Image 1 (spheres, rainbow over the protein chains, first blue to last red):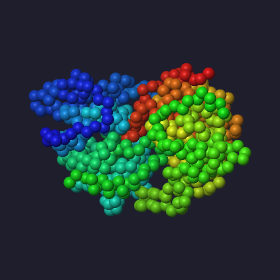
Image 2 (image 1 turned 120 degrees about the horizontal axis):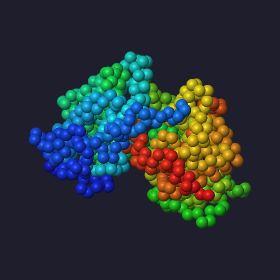
Image 3 (image 1 turned 180 degrees about the vertical axis):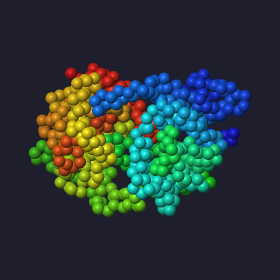
Image 4 (image 1 turned 45 degrees about the horizontal axis):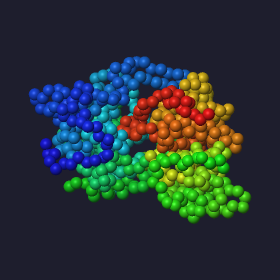
Length: 315
Length: 315
């Protein structure tokens, strides 16, 4: 499995022992909803290579009634915490660093993202699937064993609604996808390009929240992550791994989050939205100006960050 | 000055020695723009009770040209970092805890907020003044000596622009100020009320980002913080101090930010906006769901938080 020589790296998680995500501890997690297993291996037993399970401490819960909604005056709207919370355990080995996975194993994570979104789309009570990773305690991870989270919600979350609205306004004005324009412009300017492959581009964000914020986009227009092919997940994984290794080298293994921004479930192919992955390393502590006013201060420009990352990429 | 018995409390700042905000270290900061001093005390020397100075490490700078603005395509807009960054040193004593200040000294902080906003309004290149406090390293403070920040910007920051737009939409629909409606509803429901005085109300936020998030609002409609009277700053300070002491007791002296949300500089009295102060204690670590999707998870309801805080208020 090409994990020889890979060393788990510390990002200071308070580790529970034994790790509930390790093989042999399957009884510590609810029954799996997806697993990559060799033929003959039993569900919820050892032998898996990747495993998705309902979160034991769910943010949202499938047993709540999605139809109840309370509205006080025109001000206060509340819904029960209906939804699904899952954890994607990325490998059986107790590794904290996803880049320690061989390319095909890392690609399997992005296939599993796609397959869970496709599966959840069948539940018409769900409107959106958030797929993200928290790496390191400072980025909100409570366990070190490398994992992602998949949270399906009955509403389109605020950040996505704003991106959709912004994309729609740009499209109405120009007839073009704002992300496609961004791709053209970034490839032409080159100064924020960190890495590229035939079908994907990784750039530092023009207006980052944290220094070294990265965006990875498919170069072809496509709104829905779940349309990704197996070959594309492999290409994406190879590119992303190079970028993450670069990030680890430049920032000495930072805590970070990545999150997939994709269209709402069961969307048609939208002309104004374009799925992408944002990577947010914790290079600062947001304070009053950020939380209070939405103004983010960074001390490294995206052009400097991209130049540093390019130099640090593995060959 | 009634500081007897007040103990500085640790919130784990990496302290520089000697503290550049302490009396005798005035040469460590740029020349003061405002100070509360007894008659005869010399500017930029000791003797002050409160002092506002340009930030030695400014986020925005007055010497940059505010008129230059670059726009690439319809995508990328950038401005030089024009503006003014100031630090308000709240007391000469090396205290980390603003609630250790006597009421009249704490009130002076809120008068100084007002006076700096009024002064900066004269510079028509400036559009907005952000006034906020970072307390504790986890909330972004780099020095322990209690201080606030005042940052004047040539643009209306994003969070304020959204609040203004939301308030305007509500007003267009209802003819009312959304914050006035909130005040009426909160006072009637009472369950999120933490403290009240004749002219101010402190409530836990209905949809908090962090558990125990608090809002303090004037009960009378007023869009512009800088219209506050001396008597009102005193009443606000007394109320806020009680609430902050409660917060310290319930959460064992958390790191927090507070920020003033007021109307843009030189606004008329807007019917759809209402100044207020938001207090954000660091009760969690925002992760992928928060940063990626704008969804915030809290484990204590605002009603529970308000009940705890009410019980913990000093008498």
